[in-house]
Length: 154
Image 1 (cartoon, rainbow, N blue to C red):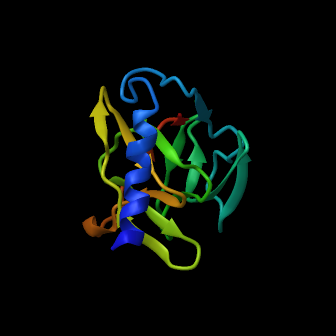
Image 2: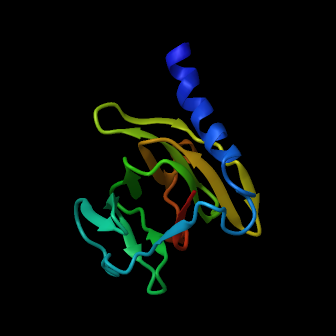
Image 3: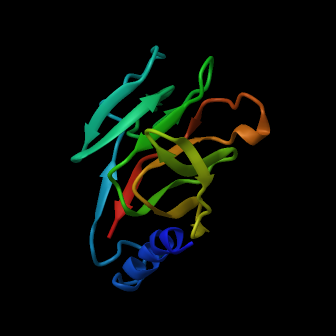
């Protein structure tokens, strides 16, 4: 129980060190991740890219031509995975798109609920290891869906 509680408290402690984490850019600054290095046409397998010093794994994710990440689920689940970003992450709120815990050895974990949704943007507190994907609970194929750019803050 104690081992599970400490990681849950970390984002709250970090939130308290930021000025206004829900409005504008917090005092710790921000990093925007754009899809410019991804293909705009479907590909097979997984792509590994380093964007702004952070490593991501992509499957079924294309560039939408405007810097946004386009999740395209065809034969395999579409996802964006990262294991080194910690604290705040935001992107466009889209029907069926979830953020959940992810571990290389254990795979996907619990869904991470948003801290806030405002003006079509969803804000999350993330731990080390997350995945953005379509929610498998719907058991359907979603149309191509752009989540825009991703922003990490604080």
